[in-house]
Image 1: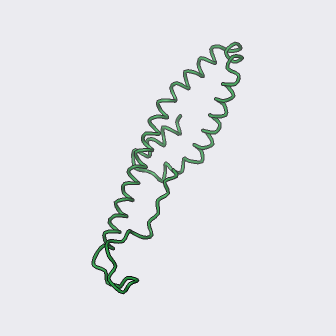
Image 2 (image 1 turned 180 degrees about the vertical axis):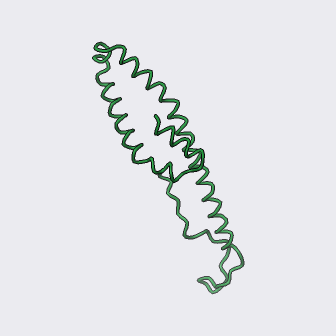
Length: 127
């Protein structure tokens, strides 16, 4: 939970590089958490019978983690939307720069018609 909260705070503060440095640790912890929860789910009846208080504690901690994770995901989503908006604005501005009066001839010997889209800007939206 502390890594998730730290990432949330860093992204809110605009310290995206520092937040990105948490990614390997976060990925490892998420993997361990998911593996542990799947194991607990598979053996829920036995765990409940053997140690009801520990099972209740695990459920309580899982319930406390969910809102923290929701906030983190919302902050990351907002940051991604802002970044996409910035890149889109830059691409449109670069494209508008190319929309000025053409200084070359087109394939048919005439001036090219209409504005041309920006070239050289790529966005990886697989985050």
